Image 1 (cartoon, rainbow, N blue to C red):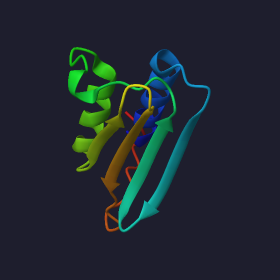
Image 2: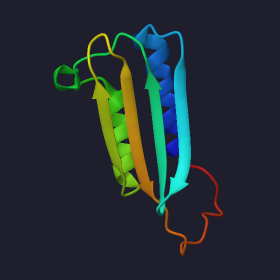
Image 3: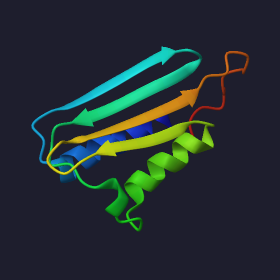
Image 4: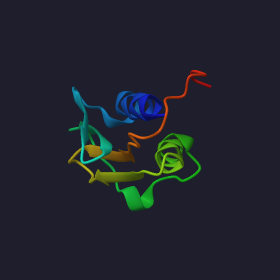
Length: 100
């Protein structure tokens, strides 16, 4: 799920941001996976986003499904940053069935 969120965020940069570069940061800190995807593209007003588009909604649902959070920071002309935080349960056994 975390991989798919990064994939969708980069897809959005490619399709919409008109950015020359994007940055991805993923680290484990304080018992959570912290993912940030940022660009310096055209940005947008997150309050005016089209909620019928599934990309951002899908990222939010994936993060929340894992007990995490999803935030968008953007402003027209200032780029976009997506921040996802997913708790990591070190006691949980890894899923041996593989991806679904």
